[in-house]
Image 1 (cartoon, rainbow, N blue to C red):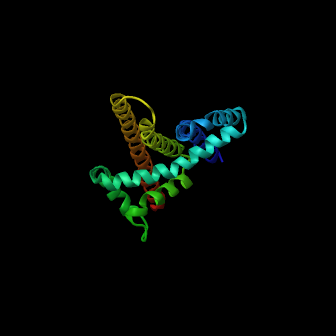
Image 2 (cartoon, one colour):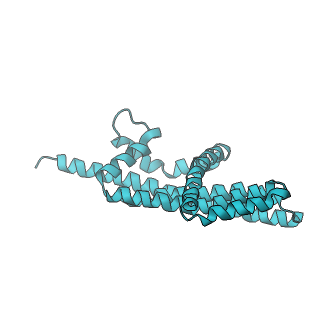
Image 3 (tube, helix red, strand yellow):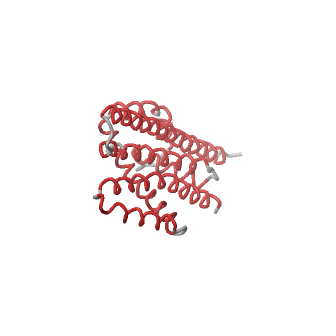
Length: 211
């Protein structure tokens, strides 16, 4: 029960944290994309929504939840384009995966190893680090996606080319920083799951030994 509460808390916290800047950027796209004659009406609508203390947080949470699958899709595209990153990640976790594969039941291949190990560890232990690492991985990945999505806004603002290049440099730098941060937490998550899975298997073998 405690783990479920922690997971719900981290999900809501992540969606709120991601949803706030995402809602602001969506509002900017709408504001800059509509004709000037509708600008005043849009301001009134946005202010009315922000004044509603119940609807606005729910809207932010909903936007934050919608960002997650988009960020996941963007990550898959990036991994296909930048094959070297994928190769480096696979190389760095080869050793522990070899140990884990020996302990997996028949029919569970390397492709589903992480999902299987995660399910076993969550079921058999009270480990809350998994939920925390998973939430932070999703949060940083979503924030990175938000920075990437904000880049076209630079071309919608009436500023000099030099300033546009500067803003793009800042945006893509922040995107890369947050993306690398999400990969860091993904690595922590995988290590936490795999090492706990190995430990559980070791304990089970100890229990099965005859006295």
